[in-house]
Image (cartoon, rainbow, N blue to C red; front, side, top):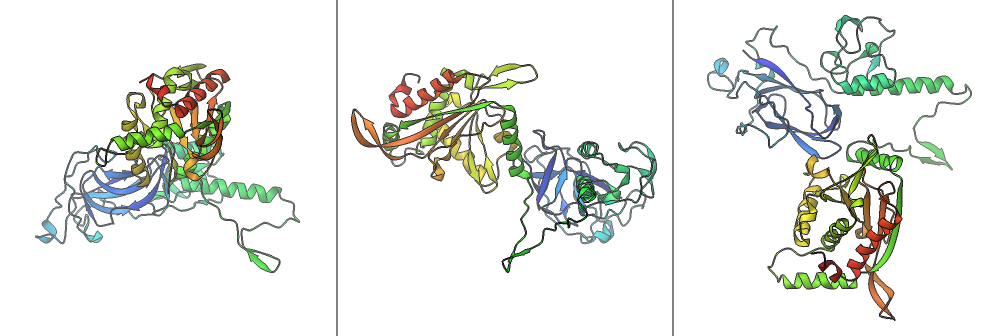
Length: 477
């Protein structure tokens, strides 16, 4: 006898409350094994393949590719112990999957069970021999906008604990996600008036978002003067030519996470920026000598970013105030024992900041190898949330975009970020004479709560001295 189990979007960690479906890896009717990846989702941190903790036949999927689901919303249903009409023996052949579930969340933390060969089973055969009371026939309902009932019904509980007649039917208010309940409370949305678009009338975040939009449009229409026409986002005509409507791009995924973090940084951190031009000619010569000494097969080349990262770790050892964070609740500055160095990387998904763990214990070659590894993972969208969090100081090389200078925004909750412009030939006074030298602009943005300008200036000057005279760094090695 088949048992239909519902698999919900699990908690992906790092405080994430929602994810966007990027690609389904299984179809309705496929046979899945325990811990087999069934869907690829994108969170604000990374792309993640989500494994199913049950083995059996997929009977329904919830959510289309491109839709966003909150944690706890149904992903799919699996018939455990379903029969396979295409297997030898017809009706009596049982599926060769275990009936239990692993309870695992992310790929790589599984039971090690082999992934079963995908077999298509006609949905009408799933649970054909089971009693209707134990094997419901789930029907996938796509995530869609909600509708409002004509009038509120004063029966039921927004928490879904009390039974009553809701939206013309008997039963509890169908809300699973705490995120949905909190969002409804924040915008004064009565969940008893919503018709959920999820399975069995489950109220999803999309339903609450739609109700919020409808409420806002109604309020705007009531307050707008009668003579003012309602503006529609449609092509307009100007000078005889059609002007296309404005494009609206949702702030979600990586773009939304970047927007939230930068906004929080600017609203919470009293930042200041200082900058200096430095002669990087000797640094470039030292790098060339290092790479020449390694020979044609002596290992990977040392990059300029790796050398700058090593200089930063030495500077942070001298000025630990900048390797800290502020505990606003306790009103304390927390100086961190180790340097986890983040570096900005531009990818097709947007700006991400991978973190080199324990950078203070690495030399330039080791830091360079780790930067190369993390950069490749970033480009392919395979960075895990753990590889994108926990940084204590960030290095931003915007010179790769052909930019000389910038005022970096601190990567909250860190205390400082060093920005590096492009290295280019410029006229420079060297040994009392005008010469063409390789010059770079360095910019340091720092949290003025953790230190004053003297500390920030000392840090930046030390970095510039190491760039101009790499031998200065030898004293700390």
